[in-house]
Amino acid sequence: MRTRVCAVGLMVMWGALGTAGRADAQVAQALVGTWTLNPELGQTPREVGFGADLIPEEPAMPGRRGTSGAGNRGRSDGNGGRPQGARNAGPRRESREDAERLRLMTAEVREPARHLTIADSGTAITLSDDQGRARAFRPGREETFTLAPDVVLVARSVFEGDRFVVTYDIQEGRQLRYAFSATAAPRRLSVDIQFLEHGGRDVVHRVFEPTRPNEAPVAAPQAAVAAAPRDGLAPPPPPLLRRPPEPGRTPAAPAGTAPPDVPAAPVVGSQRALSLRGLTKVSVAVDSLTADATACGLTQAGLEEAVRARLTNGGLTVSRLEQDIYVLVRVLTSRPSQGVCVSRYDVSLDTHTMAAFSHQRTPALVEVSLLRDGGLTGGAPAAHAAGVLEGVGRDVDAFTREIRDANR
Image (cartoon, rainbow, N blue to C red; front, side):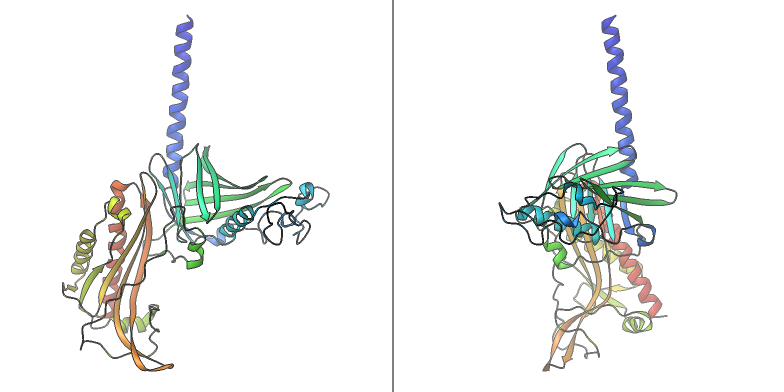
């Protein structure tokens, strides 16, 4: 009898665990995709952050007490009008690492990424954005990331009902909690961020919508990437490939060309159409790939052939000899965890020209981007190369359509 009862109990327990596993997998799959922030649908307090009265004006030296009471924003939690920090406004010892961690993570909330990609490998969920951050979380386990030299960030993740929740330890008594949830109709991603501390909390609500196929993520500022160089984050894109034209084939310099090493932003409307008029022949160049890209199934030859096929199908002649105008593909891949690949790809239609500048008499060779697009994708290695090729091909198709329209 006891054996039968124990067996029934184990079957019930296994059944419950299996149901929970399936539910968590469904939640994870609902989050997967590339998302674009819609600021109009979210809610952000005017001054978001931890209680300012507990943050010293300067990072405190070891053994030195942080200042208190300076710069309090006067947030009230219904406690008789007392600021939230008043409950625990006693002296706080704060190291330089604590202060820097607080500053960096608060800045992430105040200056959110516009594009977010979520990938699920089955064992880890990876969050990557257009500011170069990529973090992989294994639900139920503690993760450690490096925000900056000598600044470590500890995080834990868990599924709570229909939400995926990540909690970052900022300082003693202070945490940042991100809750991710998705809806199907309309398809949206909600991110609720809580500044947890004794005496109260700030709450930020953000809403993301699926990224449109022709919408390219904005490149990460150098300073934003430099703030966290060692936690598996994707570094900024490599410098633009310098490919000077052959002697005697340099066209005349157009007015308003950008100075050296600063690619000109693509012009819009009729001006851009004029720059594409008469274009029928291009070549293809693919920058060198990293070892991570190769491990994720990407090859230079595969990318080059895919781009050639798209251009040919679009009605352009693709020359294997280097042309003045060429399609340049750059792919930067990182593997923040086992079983997850994240790539940022950039596609541009480039040329070179000689430009004259007011500060010198001799014209200089500069690179000009006539068209530019790109994107961000992530997922399991087995399907990652196909995802990158699809994104790059989509951008190349958009280029050929615009060239055809300009030559009608």
